[in-house]
Length: 553
Figure: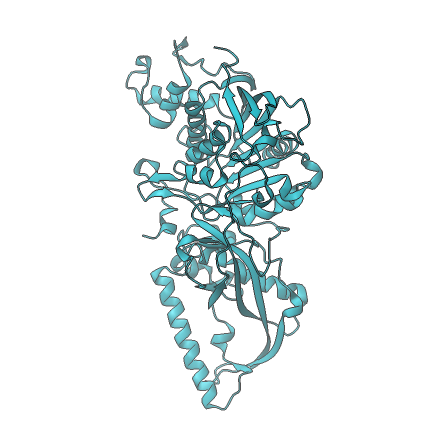
C-alpha cells in the first residue's frame, strides 16, 4: 500500500490516518524564478521545477480558455507528484507566460476512416515554477510523472475507480487524489500510449505529416512528462526566528512590550461534539504538549465563561479534576473516575463533557517570563496563548466567524498557529480573503499545519504582509499531513519558541518530526519561508529567558 493510500484510511484505533483536505480558490501567487531561493527544511528543499507540455483546444478558443485548459492540466500535478514527493508552488498556474506559447493548427484524421476529419489548435507551453522537493531526490536532476490531459471530467467514473486513492472523493477535487502510479491506472496509461503509437504509425504509412494527428491522440486522457529540477540550493547558514523582536528586546523594539501573543487555532474534522473527532483529538494533544513542557501556563480568560475543570457526574462535581485527567479521558480513554464505573454511556458522556470545555471557546493561557539580551536590556513579558477549537466551515455564518478570528490574530498576534484542514485552499484562511491592511506591521510567525499548505499559503501571506519577509516567517507543509499526532508537532513548535533555548528554525522543524509506526522521523516536507533576511543569532547576540511563577497557584 502506498503512502498516499495510507492517508485515506480512517481509523485512529489502528494507527490509521486521514489526510487534511486540500480545491484552490483564485488569486494564489507563486515565488517563481529560474533559480529557487533556498528555504530551511528538515527533509526537503525548494528547487526550480520546469517542464514543457501541450494542450489541444478548438481553433476558435479565446486566450482565457487556452490558459484555463493549461491550468486544468497542470493542477493535476498536485496529485501526480505526491508519490515522488515534489509539490510545486503555484496553485492555479498563474505564472504562465502566454507570450511564450506556440500555436499549431493540426488536422485530426482517423486512419481507419471511421470518423470525419476536423481541426484543432495545439498550444505548446513551458511551465517554470519552484517546488518543495524531498531530500531523497537531492541527487536527481529530473522527475517523471503523468498529468491528465484535456477535459477529464467526462472520464471521472473510470478515473475515480482506477486512478484515485479515494474513489469516493468529490469530483471537484479529483485532481488532488489523482494517483497515476496505481496499478490499474498504470495499465490505462500504458494501453493508451500503445494505441496512440499504433495510430501514429498508421497515419505515417498514409503519408500524413507531423501536423496530422489521430482521434486517439486528440482525445488522449494522459500525458507522461519529465520535469527538470534545478540543483538543490540550501541556506548558507542556520537561521533563527527573530526571538529578540518577539520578546521586545531587539535594538529596534519599541519600549513597553508586555505580551507575546500566540493565536492557536484548531479546525474540526466532522463533529466537534464527538470526543473522538480526529482533529479534536489533535487540539487536545497540542494543549497537553504545551502544558507538559510549560506547566506554569494558567488559563486566565474563557469566552464563553467556563470553569474548565468543573466536571460533574450524576449532578455531582468531581473532586480534584486536573487538565491531565481530562486529556487522558479524551485522548487515551483511560483514568476514568470511579463515579462513571464501566458504563460505556456514562464514560462517553464524561468524555463529551470534558471535550465541550475546550470546544467553541476562547481559552487564554498565560505564562510570565523575564527576557534579557546580551547588553542587559531586560523585559518582563507574558506569553499568552489564545486557544480556539471549533468549526470553520458549514455555513456562511460559521466561515465568517472563523475569518473574524483570523483577522484578530493577524492584527494583534505575534505568532499564528493553525492545525486542521486546508479545505483545498478554499476555506476561511484563503489568502484572497485578506489584504495588507489586515496585518500589523510587527514581526510575526505563521505555522499552517495542514495538507500541502506550501502550495496554498506559502508566498501569498508574505507578499501581503507589510514589510514582506522582513516581518513575516511562514512554516508550511509540502505534503499532505497525516492527522495522527500533528497536534503534538504544533505543540512542539509552540513550546520550542518559548522554551528559553532559542532553537534555530532547522532545530524547530526537527523537533516536530514524529516517531510513528510508518516512519521514525515523520515530516510532511515542512519548510520555512521568509527566514533568509532574519538577523537574530543566539550565538552572536543571545537572549536569556526565565520562566516566572504562574499567575496563580
